Image (cartoon, rainbow, N blue to C red; front, side):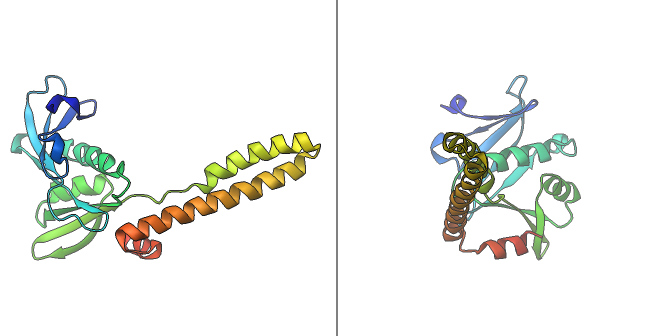
Amino acid sequence: MKDNFCLKSDTLTITPSDMGKLWESEWDIAFRKDGKEHIGTATFAGEKILGTVPLNVELMPEYRNRGFGTEIIRMMVNWAFLHKNIFEVVSKVEHENDKGINALQKAGFVYRGIEGKVETYSIVKEKTSWTGVYLAIGICIGLLLGIVLNSVWLGFVIGIAVGLCIGGIMDSSATKYRESVTGKSARTAKRTKK
């Protein structure tokens, strides 16, 4: 069952140890060539609240400071963000761990604060934007409608208006869903992102 699912890059594979508990089990990190050389683990284990999951990556000492950390973090974050209810990934790192901090920052994580000797970093999923997609679809449909009505400009204007309305409704719906999961308004999320 372990071989049924894994994350792959050009150099690495990341495979969950328990397919039934992807968010709690350790994920084994190995080189892609042979898949047998274990270089570390990653896990989402920890407190998951309001659309936020923790991420912890541990590399064996001989594989640190070689760029693998950033690659692993990006792969794990991208997988987490494929899930509809996940909007933020948080990672904690010792204040003195400059290489770990650097890997998080290269992966797009932002400093959120310090508690004792542990710094907190996180990355927030970008907000969904449907308006552009529906605007393009609306323009195409509007132009076709304009040809049928013998007034391309009228069809074009109708298409833009319909596209903007549908896109705005979809964006508003996505924002409301995100706020219902995270308990944070879109404005709060933007302020904490900086």
